[in-house]
Image 1 (cartoon, rainbow, N blue to C red):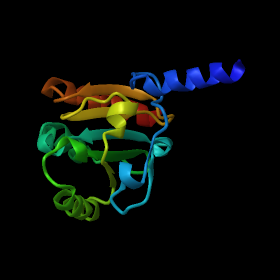
Image 2 (cartoon, rainbow, N blue to C red):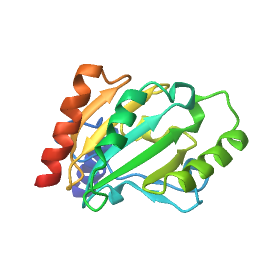
Image 3 (cartoon, rainbow, N blue to C red):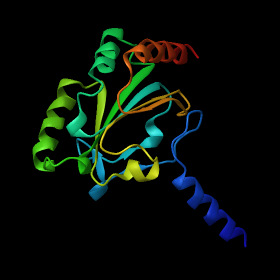
Length: 172
C-alpha cells in the first residue's frame, strides 16, 4: 500500500508545473534527450548555490528577449554569485540539429560564463510544463527555487524589476 502511495506521489510531482516559490522537479538531459553542448549530461540539480537566470529557447524565437539579455550583460553580475543557463529546445524548430549544434558549440566558446544545453525531445516542456515554441525565462534563487517566471517576451517595464530581483537574491 505504502509503495503505491509513493509511486502516486512521485507521478503527481513529476507532472506539476514549475511554480514561483517552488523548486522544479529534477531533470537530467542525456543521450537522445539532450545534453550540454560538450556532450556531457546536464542536471537541473546544478541550478543551486548561485542565483541563476534560466532561458528555455525555441531557436525560431531566439531574439524575443534580446532587451533582457542585453540588460543582463550590462549588469555584469559577479559570476561567483550569478550564473546563466540557456537550454535550446531543438525539437521546436524546423532547423536541423546538425546546423544548430555547431553554432551553439561556438556560442559556448564565445560566452563561457553561460552554460548552453540541448533539449532534443522537449523534456522540459513535459517535466516542468514550460511553454513550447517560445522563449521562457526563469530566475532561480540559491536554493533552486523559482522566483520569477515569464513565458514569452519579458515586457520592457519588467526588465528593471528582474535585475532588481537578481541583485536582491544575490545578497541573501
